Length: 120
Image 1 (cartoon, rainbow, N blue to C red):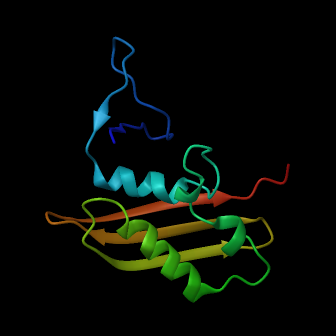
Image 2: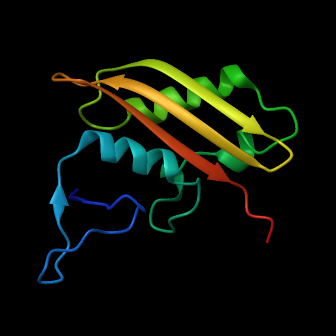
């Protein structure tokens, strides 16, 4: 599977010629996995994170969330360990921030994603 480079807004980054740019960034792959909602992609619905089932619920189970986040990050090729998981959930605004520190064979990375449940 070829990963494509994303810009700071999460959009595909294009070369001057308009071509997509491939990347081998493990940190970017982790970020994409954490932003991918369960059943979002019709060709691989099981690949997303179950936010609606476990995060955006009345009383989220924090231990279960930590376990699911760890599994999601560890599933990214090249990740060797997850050393820290923090999250903040605002049930009134239906927003959450998740930060994960993880290691590869070469370095330690920290990725943070912000999520919101659409009220549409």
